[in-house]
Amino acid sequence: MESQSIHPDLEPIAFLLGRWEGAGVGGYPTIESFRFGQEIVFEHDGRPFLAYQSRTWLLDDEGTMVRPLATESGYWRALPERQLEILLAHPTGVTEIYLGEVAFHKIEMRTDVVARTATAKEYTAGHRLYGLVNGNLMYAYDMAAEGQPLTSHLSAELKKVG
Image 1: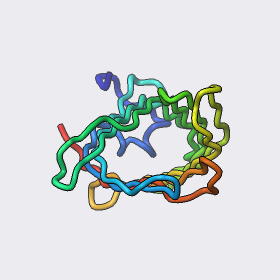
Image 2: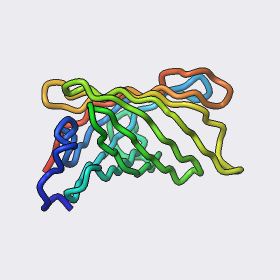
Image 3: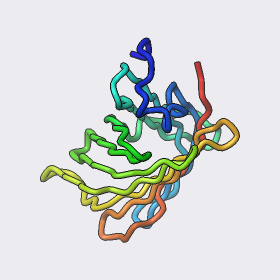
Image 4: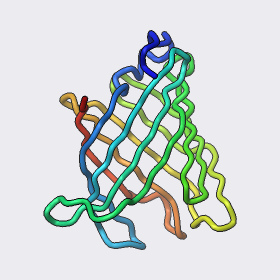
């Protein structure tokens, strides 16, 4: 997918391109804290968006994969003046539209729309912060769900691979 030259609108987020792997920690008032592994892939085909895929898995105390956790996929659409629209879909019956902004190698985004199927868990809002720090992709994700206000949920550090 990355054989095309990058669209000029993608320049502010071109640092995301590629495959990233690493680990993080998660928790929430309604669940026990946990450690997870993650892979994120950002690709492009020459048009002004990045295709995005993320998958995570539970890690035990030794760092061994226990079982799959969450997966999400979507598109990061570049707009003028370093603005972004991010569309994400989850197999749990949730879709999200985030509005974001890029400042150097930092991206901050908040949900504009959250849609859920009748069988999806209650989830109402998200806030994500991504940044390139010493060559690694760091992020933090806060969510409002299960009757809780916007609260810290996940953070991770990923290294570029491949």
